[in-house]
Image 1 (tube, one colour):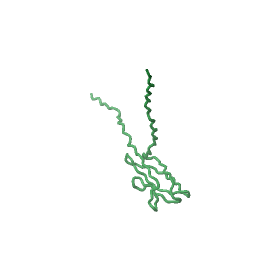
Image 2 (spheres, one colour):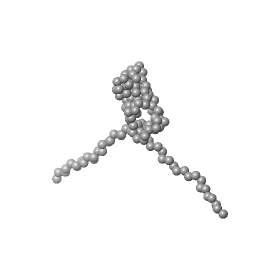
Image 3 (tube, helix red, strand yellow):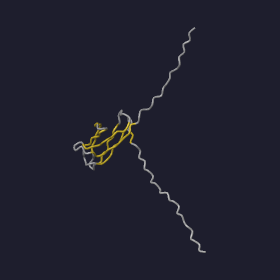
Length: 119
């Protein structure tokens, strides 16, 4: 009687999934200072818009690099768009999204309990 070769069943392989890269969210709470950096045309005047409102500006250096520090004021909680653009051409050179956290929940405080004794 002939013997059959053993049947080899391949074990299933589980594909490895790539580990997601987590980027920290840009936070823009009141009082925070954000450093906006990038590269554009050399020696160009720049304008910073926060939700389409002009809030600051700066200029690029001879190599085109810029660094603008933006101090965040009292903004409503939620997501906001920050755009850096050239003043002359209105060309967008950098865009950011930041999140303003909600204000802390107030904790109730109770004063001392006053009892008046009447005779």
